[in-house]
Amino acid sequence: MNILSTSLEGMDRAQEKAERAAKRLAQFAAFEDQSPVDRVDLSSEIVSLVAAQNALAVNAAAARTGAEMEKKLLDILA
Image 1 (tube, rainbow, N blue to C red):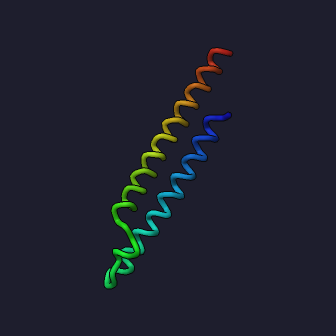
Image 2: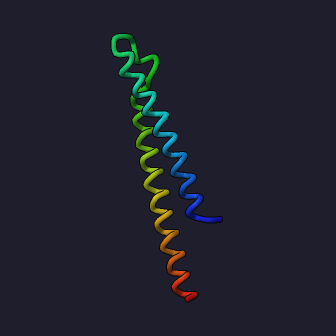
């Protein structure tokens, strides 16, 4: 299992989640004159955005750590 590819996959999923939440939040602005409460739950969309942000941060940290580990391993083997 390659930590870098796993991290990138997690980052892709987090980005997709953030994009979906952003689209739903944009719908809220589109229905300003109507009743948006039935269409968009702002609190759950904000929670989704924060969760996606955290997932991106965690996966980026995992990718950095994996790259550092690979570098140290190569240094040891050299």
